[in-house]
Image (cartoon, rainbow, N blue to C red):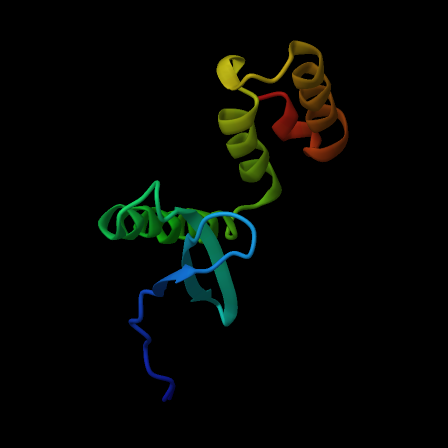
Length: 115
C-alpha cells in the first residue's frame, strides 16, 4: 500500500532582482524531486499575466519530455528525425545526411534502419 500523497502544487512565479540589468520573472517548480528554474523574461517585457501564461507552457514542455523517457532507441531516433532533421529545420544538408547515416549504420538495429 502506497501512503505517499499526490502533490498538486504548480510551481511559483517570482521577480528576481539583477545586479546588472532589469529584474526578471522566474518560474520555479519541482519535477521528480529535482528543483527546476526558468527565466521567462524581464519585468518590462512581460506583465504578470503574460509571465503566468508562459510558465504554463514550461510545465507542458516538461510533460512532453517525461513522455519521451518511456521510448526505446528506435522510437527516440524517429522522434529526433521528425523534429530535428526535417528539411525546414534550418540544419544544413551535410550534417543531416551524416546523422541519418550514423543512425542507420551504428545506432539502429539492422531490421529497423531499413524502414
